[in-house]
Length: 171
Image (cartoon, rainbow, N blue to C red; front, side, top):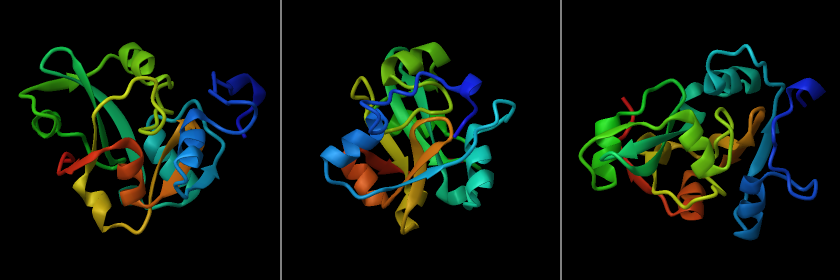
């Protein structure tokens, strides 16, 4: 658990979990939680999680928010050791061009803080695209809605939980 001074607005509901974990429980989707002590000096939240939990980077996914064609937001879920291909993300949601959303815009739209943005349980229902590499995995990891907490679940369950599409969006 993070030190008391490092706690963020955790979006815990009645001490039961984060918005993401509660959404998965309500949908009866099986998952496992993995917690680690987040270091605020870490330069990459995803790689930090991968290293702290001893999980291969290709199984640990980051959730990134982009603005497509100037305004509409979309979410890309890609392995932490790869980059989001913005042009491919735009194409996957029917757009032409995408740019990374400002952090404050992403946080406001999802209801989560950067480094803890989960594809599950977001404040606004945004289109989600999961990188095709996830489909070859038995389980994958993504943020559970706060820094230092990860969800492990089957890729098909994540896709079902958020109504995601699958495309090759990582480079």
